[in-house]
Length: 376
Image 1: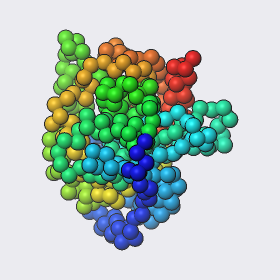
Image 2: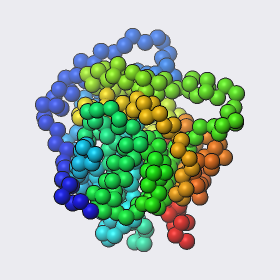
Image 3: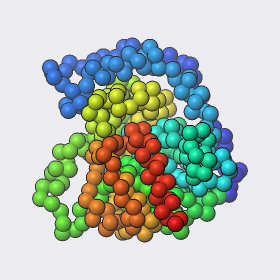
C-alpha cells in the first residue's frame, strides 16, 4: 500500500462559478423546434424548460456539495494522472473490497445513494448484511479528477490505472467489480488483464458483438440507426461538440438528458423516472470541472486503441450479468457466454441503463446474491 500517494480531497466550488452558471442558465437561447418535437427527435422542450427553471431557482448545489463531501474522497497520482476517488470503508472496517465503475453520461454520483447500504451504515439493513469497502473512481477526464493532456487514455490504460489504484495504492490483494456502460468495458479489461486480483465481475450492460459467422442480416445497419449517432460523433469529432457543452449549461443538459430518457425505463417521463436533484448533480459533475469535452474523448481513445470493446478473449473471472428490461445495449445470452464466464444471469422487468439510480435495491440484492453464490 502506497499511502504516501493518497491525498484527501474535497469538492469546493467557488461562488463565482455558481454565479456564472446562474447567468448562463438565465440567458438560455432556446432553439426553434417543429410542432410535436420530443425526445424522439432529440429534445423535449417542456422537460428541458422544467429542468432549467428548477436548476435556476430551486436547485441547491451547496446542499449537494456538503452531502458529497460527507463521503471520504481522495486523489492519487497513477500513471502521471491525478485519479479522484471515493474510498468508503465498511462499518466493521473489514468489508469486501468493491470497485464501482460508472459510465457516460453518468458519473460517480450514480453510486452515492447505495453507499450506506453497501457499507453497512444504513439502519434499514439487517445486522448480518454483507459489508463492502467501496472504491468509486472517476474515469480519467470525467468529473473532478485529472484530465489527460496527451492521447492514449483509452480503456486499456484506464483499466491498468484502476488496477494499480486498487492494489499498489490502496493495498487490496483482490477485489470485486461492478459496472455498467464504460464501467462494463473497463471492468472487463481489468478482469482480462489482471485476473489474479479480480474475484468477480458484475455488469449491467449485457452487450457483446455477434460471434464471427453469426452476424444477423442488417445487424450493423440496425446498430447504426439505433440512436448511436452520439457514439460516432464522440469517437470521431468529440471536440466539435465540446465547446457547446462547455459554454452552455442547457446545451450540456440537452445532450446528456436525452440519453437518460432514451436509455432508461422512463415511459412515465424523465422526471418521474429520476430525482431531478440527482439529474442536475450529475450534470454538475460535467459542468463545474468543465469535463464534458474531456469525458467525451474516451470514445475517440477507444477507437484509436484499435482494441474492440468486447475483444481480447474470454473473461475467466466469475461473472454475473444483470439484464434490466429497458437496457438498450442487449445481446443474446449465448453471445455473452462466449466472452464471459457467466455464473449468474438475471433478468428484471423494470429498470434500464442506470440501475443504481432507477432500481437501486434490485441492483444491490443481485450483487449480494451473486457474491453469496460464489461463497457457498
